[in-house]
Amino acid sequence: MDSHILILLGSASAIALAIPASLKLRARLMLSRAKHRSLTGHSKMSRRVARLIPFYEFGIDDFFKSDGAPPEVAGRRRDGFFRLSQLYRERFARNRQMTSQASEGISDLQFTASYRVPFQYSRLVRENLGAGVFMQASSGVTVTDVDGNTFYDLTGSYGVNVFGNDFYKDCIAKAQVRAAALGPVLGSYHPVVAENVARLRAISGLDEISFHMSGTEAVMQAVRLARYHTRRSHLVRFAGAYHGWWGDVQPGVGNPIAPHETYTLADMSERTLQVLRTRRDIACVLVNPLQALHPNGNAPADSALVDSSRKGAFDRAAYTVWLKSLREVCTERGIVLIFDEVFVGFRLAPGGAQEYFGVRADMVTYGKTLAGGLPVGAICGRKDLMRRFRDDRPVDVCFARGTFNSHPYVMVAMDEFLTRLADPAFRSVYDGLDATWDARARQLNERLAAQDLPVRVANLSSIWMVHYTEPSRYNWMLQYYLRAEGLALSWVGTGRLIFSLNYTDADFAEVAERFVAAAGKMKRDGWWWHEAAMTNKTIRRQILKEMIVRR
Image 1 (cartoon, rainbow, N blue to C red):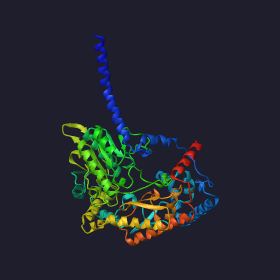
Image 2 (image 1 turned 90 degrees about the vertical axis):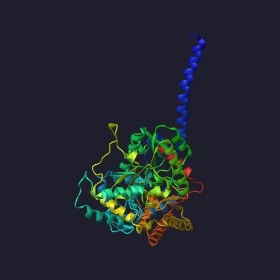
Image 3 (image 1 turned 30 degrees about the horizontal axis):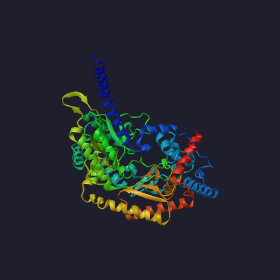
């Protein structure tokens, strides 16, 4: 063969090989650019960084001056800290003892106790400011612990408590009576299941329902079904969003084995939409509407509050535009859009986030509050996506079952919940809901500003988070001052305050009074002292230096 022809054939072959490689590289670059720039958006990198961080802690001398505070300020902090410690020992004596004993056999308590504050300060805080975890009663918007201390409840039972503890106690009590004849008979259905299905179909606007025992389980099955029907492998989650603790939706720190079929992309990003438009391996997109309060940020917790860079702000109009754009692209590309409403479901509107933002998903998962205070998970989805088998391939199935799915007591409690939700008189609780909670947040912020306190709140309706206006390494101390004032927070501290919707203006006024008092005492004790030159950046640099020295 002529040498020129061989050269031409070789060149053609090289070009043919280069084109797919070039397209693959371009797709990879687009994917990388669609990730959020922080470690939140780069799960592999975050895991590597986590493995590099050494353990160290401050002793009694350095604990109060880790930010370079002068002796006078460190002394005020020390006095305030041990004054709180004495108060905690006297006020929470029985609770502290019970919690200490229980922690020896409950790994969950060991974890939450260790991660309430940044690890450098954890041991001294655990020894002195443990209040205990045992509550014995609730009433109205308050809870009472085993020592008889009554607190305004800002935990929201991690999202369960939308309408008030008394509401759920009533649902459970009536469900117990109604379900007693059948009892815990599993496998068959209690008659109320049919009514629950009809109501959930009407609420979600979707065709079929599947019940599970938790929100995490419901999200797992929704993703499995999306992969099964699209015959695609990857799911897309957004940086910072929480969808349960299972592996595919927790690709970063906290997951021992990194998933390989998860893309973590930036929320509210045109680059993300471009990736969805061009890739062929994406089965579904998961949206947690709670992220509207802090897009691309992890669920805020005081354990990670090393400086004052945590922020939150809710822009309903902007997030609605984003969800509608996402809906259009998913429809165009045959990607399943899943709303994970386990946390926000029925808190924002009777029809959940779909109604609140005016966007219809292909599948919606619910949990938390849906079963009237009992454990539950549920998927609502299009008929073609909910089917778990193929008529033409009898062995090709998408299996999912659970021993406690559709438990009679859970189903009857759900019926109690949905019956109340359907009552027009009850639905009046949603009238002017955003205006009410926005006004309350604004009032509290005005009071904090008037007293020159470096604390502010941001809110998505009745879900709030606290952020700080001046650089500090000690913002996490606020949770302990708040508890001393009779405000109960979840273990994540000031990162998330969840109000039940039965808070009256008088109830909230009392919470605001106590909140401002706690912040005032913390300021007087010197925790928010800082040098004029201190910034969040200089704090992070100091922490990096500390880690390098320890390594």
